[in-house]
Image (cartoon, rainbow, N blue to C red; front, side):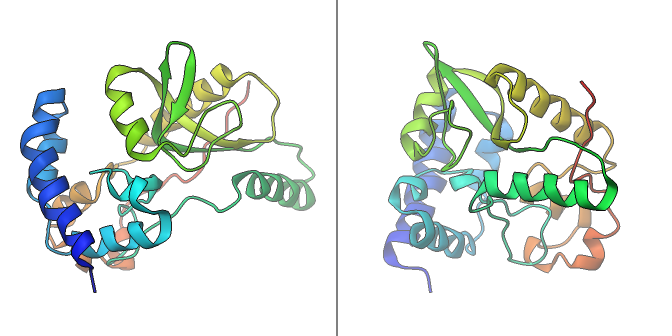
Length: 220
């Protein structure tokens, strides 16, 4: 059951303070404001999970808490970032080489942004490549409003190149996914609208009707 803290963070903090005061004041997208103002009662369970798994620093974020994704997954499941992105990237590279003999490099990235604040790159996510300051939570979420948004956040990479190139490659992959997917679910609300059903009633069968692109191959 959601705790009192989770209920307060959902209803008073996220839905009302951010949805009606802070987001309009800071110039957030109309879509974000609308989504916050229409948060369902079940959002308390999600906030409780964030509190238990990642702590108050992430539960204070009104959106995108710790990169936990509710879209593209069925019912009330969520998708988390890999526990060890670099280990995952190395493993995928090894498996591909064993099965195909091809030597490819792997970049794991997340659509949550990397920002630049006076030359310092940071992300709100709990993980990223070493040259991007991470685990900033609500502090990075607020600072991001006064920083330059660079692009998606690379979590791990087996290719050795500068961070600007990695972010550029992640942006190319993200653009390819959006342009080549018949329905791109940026949020759980897009998924709900597309299937014309409550988000907790989205089944694997419904998701299988949509073209998904979990990986993009880039030659450079």
